[in-house]
Length: 414
Image (cartoon, rainbow, N blue to C red; front, side, top):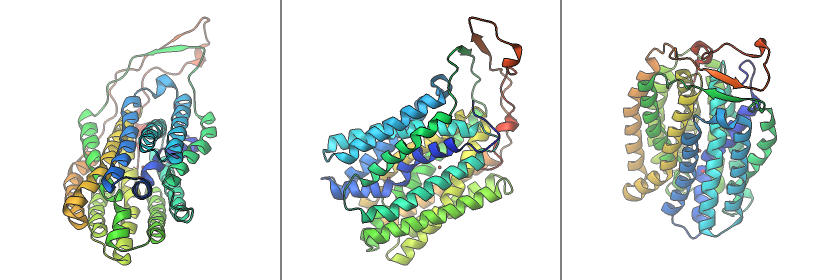
């Protein structure tokens, strides 16, 4: 479906556009709270609805990218994202803001699904994933530095996401499309490694929930508990995302040298400590230390988890399903963080999230060390229906691609 030899920049761009809404979650929720007649919990619920819609798109489209065609599905997703986020940015009517956020979230999810499916089918998914994370981290960092200087309007982060979707739209012309001259009947292979896949998806849901429970309220921690200004908080976030770029570069350079288990297990344990530190911050030093260390480690671990999911199925279905489970956890994060912090306070919330991460680090590591022997031998049969016979050399070999060609030697906020 996708070329497997060189870096696919359209996939990197699509990955960036799809993940940007999650990376801008703190400023999006914070501005909804400040600029509209909403409570902090209600603003967090809108953020959760946006990300839940994105996760829903992933679950619905995980096995349908081939059927709809990557190019058409990516374009549809980006147009929905631009229309939805643009509407939410331009209106102050709360029901329209909610509707626009949900529609935009679905579009982001569709774009991310196409990107994840394409990345999983590449020879080195870890490298493409790290480039995508590099792109979204750099863009989000620049926006965190810029948005506070453009005024207090609630729609600025949403407008930035909509504009990004429109800017990425032209590169979808380089994605593959379905062959118009033929219809294909395909017998599907069952999902390989079901136990490992389900366990990874389940733990990834809670992994992302913990991360984004804090990420969704990080802005409020900086403003209220640490006593910082919005400009200072934005600068901390930009610095943290810049440190994340260094983490991505490091992960790309390391590649498969450390395997999958150490980066995932040890990295998750370190992230737990960073979350506890950041949630308990009472000044600039502790807040910045927690956020910067956390955002340095987060993309590193995420890139290896995505690569692990890609290694479970060369057709990319586990990569999309694990990514959708992650998006579901991300969607529940802002509301969970708002509720926990409102009832127990930020430090207690951080402790609960840190303990939870330590617990789920164990099964995630077990999946990473479990050997994967390749996909089942059930063939993928393609029956072209054409009006005229075609030359024999136009057809490839029947059956799934070897698992070794798609297995990742290594290893995506507001």
